[in-house]
Amino acid sequence: DGGITQSPKYLFRKEGQNVTLSCEQNLNHDAMYWYRQDPGQGLRLIYYSQIVNDFQKGDIAEGYSVSREKKESFPLTVTSAQKNPTAFYLCASSMSGETKQFFGPGTRLTVL
Amino acid sequence: QKEVEQDPGPLSVPEGAIVSLNCTYSNSAFQYFMWYRQYSRKGPELLMYTYSSGNKEDGRFTAQVDKSSKYISLFIRDSQPSDSATYLCAILNTGGFKTIFGAGTRLFVKA
Image 1 (cartoon, rainbow over the protein chains, first blue to last red):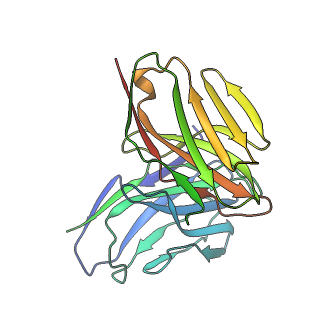
Image 2 (image 1 turned 90 degrees about the vertical axis):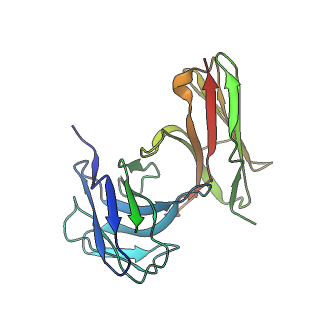
Image 3 (image 1 turned 135 degrees about the horizontal axis):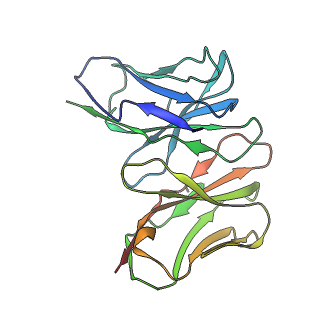
């Protein structure tokens, strides 16, 4: 099956720890995105990547980092610098120049 | 002013009702309009995609765009309990890359 996978589904982190969220796609999409979703708010763009080895900051990149070493993979690291990391994190992908994005199932991160 | 405004609801309707979900936007450069459906604790899935003003129909769903009023709507006919979800509008300007999402409207369809 073609699609986007995210792992883990649930993640718990202690304050001061860095954690990495996985996102993999086998849709052969060039572009990949990371969003954060909080209750009552729309999806906010953290980082996006249009091609391998290149990525750009979105609206709320502070406290996050990404890498794009492979077309299929776009991991997100939530660092200890992110002051309010508890949220639902969504990864998406799209064909280059295509407006329609396809989303993964999400990772719910909770800081204890 | 937010670029996209969407009433978060919740909206509760009986089974079989016609549902109207709406968004307004501020930038006339926006040209692509989408509706996503998101079930609880799941990722959003693309439901409807339109480019021009007017109506686009797909089964029980109709997407409507009024560019002169900067107003987009999603209508659901013969609503079912399985339609209970959060519906997010999303817009994008021509040549742009960043999709702007509304806050989402929570819909409950009661059997």
